[in-house]
Length: 537
Image 1 (cartoon, one colour):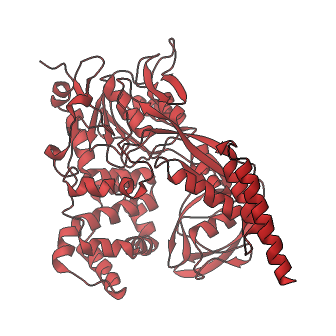
Image 2 (cartoon, rainbow, N blue to C red):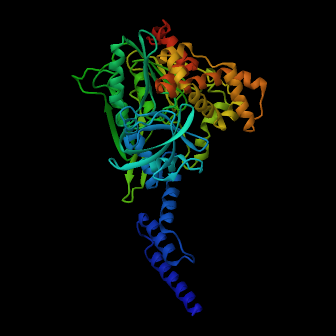
């Protein structure tokens, strides 16, 4: 019997081979389906057909550019959620502290705030399932807290009351929770506004318009737009936002590919009144500002609308078209390149199929000194163009080159600092400190401005952090701890401010330590702004 099966299998394979040879001229597009069918029918062992298909798709995409990717249904949902502008959940921001969910803030007017959840609460169980002390991942916890709008979730909260821990049960009705792109918007000085954008999502343009309106009411006539570490998002969100800074009908970006004709993306049509078409504008960017961030920076630079301060941006200028499958999975296939209004290709060079070299590009920039020394930046004369109004020389070749370079300062980033951060000790220290001093800080510093101006991280606080680090096996290094002391103090203060006030407080503290922000602020209030943004002599 066994021999008969083997003979039958061999005969079937021969028959299949004969069919394939007879149809040697068949369209290449059918090869993959034929291979998958042959494997599923004749392979010696059982195969997972879904995984087989997924691996084949991934294999095809890996031979293309670095940004064509496949995502399974769960990955697709996680990719899309931050860009859609909202999700359904309970409305909290949280940290994990020793396997316990610690509530940092509740969303104003959200489901948790309405039932009485407070900053500093620990959620220890969800629907009778313990989530504290069981090693549950953040993604697993979020799955339990998020759910269909209008559905209920029961949570058990541990709260410190009058110096004693107490447990309280809450039933929270899930609702749509907004995901904001604008992390912070505030007045730096009586004339200078600041807007920090972390992504380009469905509601970004509306959020920026609101922030601009609010800041103008406070006297803003010049703006610092922070796109540092902003990895991008939707093309249309960047174009719509640029409509608030450029004249109506201006080209913001165009796309073009071998199989797709040129498509121009312009700002709002004539008749639309931009909120900030005049006034000094400085855009903060660095090597991790990518995609839609580069579209924004490139258009502002090309039209001489403002200055770019920081370091050369990432160089992600490939357009991905989403191709969804019925099971919820998706291919994001590159179909074109992004070009700035002057025709600069934003995409940095790459070799097809060489993912490793592409991923190591940032390390190469560091090693050759580009992040620290302006004279290490490579400009290619053949890629030099002129801006559209003032005819200033600017360069293509991948990414957006800043008008004012700010070097990366690594002097405070010691090995000791990295080891402390890797253990999550700064967050744990801040959580414990805020637990003990929340009421005192709120009473002493009535506003976050008071906190930013007057609160100081003491040597005793840093000593306590070092004790925690030593207890966790981090070897203390006196020289490195002293070198990193200003960085430790700044991060601790910024996190305390965020936990007690709001997210903007974090940036009010952080920015005073950030070289890119400090140079942007100096430049926007300096005659150097006009000299950099002027026609060449």
